[in-house]
Image (cartoon, rainbow, N blue to C red; front, top):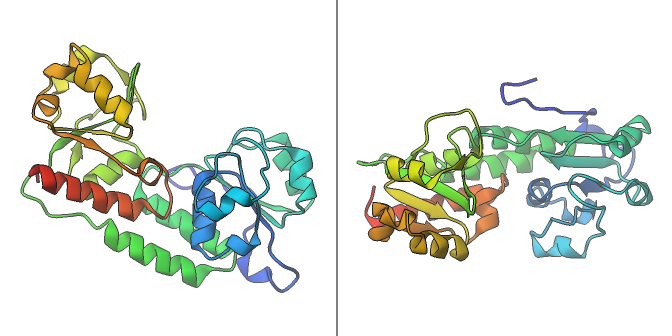
Length: 270
């Protein structure tokens, strides 16, 4: 088990697939669905979770249930050779399928972009797409290269306003901020996604606030306490237009880093 606690259950033998039969893949999470499709395996994707929405073509795929509770009967009917999930808990249904010979691969959610690239490499190996995985990783690595900046704005990523939920320093989102040229304003690593009091946020006084929903931005701007923040008063609130690309640990993360970097430059904070 690696530092970030991968739980890879099942055997991943990508080269053997295609010799003994066609791949039939079920994805249990939006992130794994995006990775599978980026690896050119959309034609072999036979089922997805109800939360999978990108690329658009996956919306016509059979639904195997929710993230936490895939339906066993549906899984069996789709006759998969591989089941892949990121951040997906193990279930009795998945254990039964594993015992029957299905290659079930469950991987903990990554906390860094480097860990994401390792996941992409492993999924590529499992599906016989190692070369394509290396190409995807090369692109992400370039997009997410660490920028040299004169300033690194102290940034608070607000995920919801009531209660005030934010991204902590030991999260995938914090790595996106760092690689885009900023730094997280939070330093304590006790919780990945803590809920903060408004008074505590005032003391933090971030240079920039990042939100993923216009409703969050509006709520912050009209809050009697939070509107005292300099970031709000000086209009240094960045709205992420593509929420899924920013929050989801998938192959579009390079686009998210570049988008946030451009937003920092527009605000003249780096």
